[in-house]
Length: 144
Image (cartoon, rainbow, N blue to C red; front, side, top):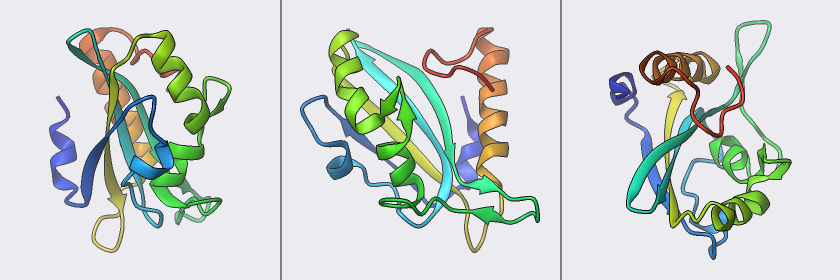
């Protein structure tokens, strides 16, 4: 669905189950910025439930990479807030409530030495594309 992500060569994914520690299974970089897609695996189905990004565009046109805690995309995935608290706390709870077998989380570095695509711009494009196809946001996205 998102062919535009193919250009980002620094990418990967990992699975997260409710009984695991998100900080241990997350293989996203701690020193890079980019976008991530969260897929829910439940009841034999795979659904894209969230599109997010890490890294802020500053007024001077540069990028600020998340430094707190672990840093980079990994810190955003592990310590970023969703469902009222940090993901490492809320994901296992939500997964049990929604009977989710696992989350398959894909990440893409969009801003590095070679590529200078601001993560928030790419996130916005991906959400807009999803919306144009399905007429709604991914279930866990609140706005764009």
